[in-house]
Image (cartoon, rainbow, N blue to C red; front, side):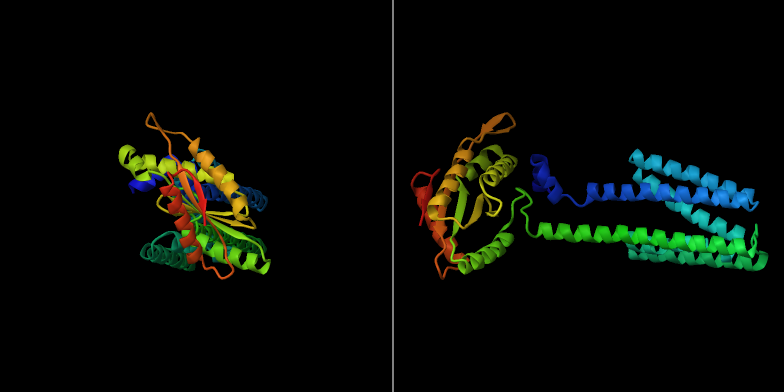
Length: 359
């Protein structure tokens, strides 16, 4: 947990990767609730005019109350009181469904609106809670059926008017189910995208991780061999990183890794693949470049890190990096390229660090 906290504090980009959907999901949900509140308010205005026209003032003014509630829901969303807005929204829909059914009867179709709660509770609550709420809903509907069977609707209307209300409610039910389905489908798609990102991105630096790099090498290797092109691999290691960690703490080390990753990213092309290989080691794949061209890139990265100053708790932190470079041979595997690049990196370390060697 400490590392995740350091990561989030040191790099805003990382917060997006390491934090759950949280803020983004709330923004999407808030927008959906606001739109549904506006739509429901407009529907209740239509109901107000309809019931007023057929001579049912009580039903008309009930819908005025609903419009005021939806205005309150919209205001709660605007003030970021999302949980309260959602609770009030579903309370209004449920109450409206029950009251409409009691007033106009089963044939009005108001009970359709109560059925919207089934997918909502089953997808947002635990299985046990969802089942309990669904059973409660069935009991409410059964109670309404019993009351209406014994006493009939409290404010009956003509068959034609009832038919109009029923089909309007059925249309409303279909639209609301479609909106709910769209929202949950969006959540599932976002979760899948986040899982794919977590599988290919290093949580600390925001660079690609080793798993992604290995796949990128396979693709680049096949492309360059097919085109008879060149492919270079650059291994990068921060010099004296452990003493920096031991002296200034792991948060300082994390800051340094993040800043070095930023410098590296700025120095390479879009078609290059840059990854954090592990610890303080990075790897860079350079398709279509020769050793000499790759040395220019490495030198640019080296100079950028040499000029880097990271301020941490009032202290100026600096570091240098060493490079090992190799070019792909006809029958190379990734392990063979890495082994040669590591030998070149070791030569750079033995030569005093802060330099580039190739093999």
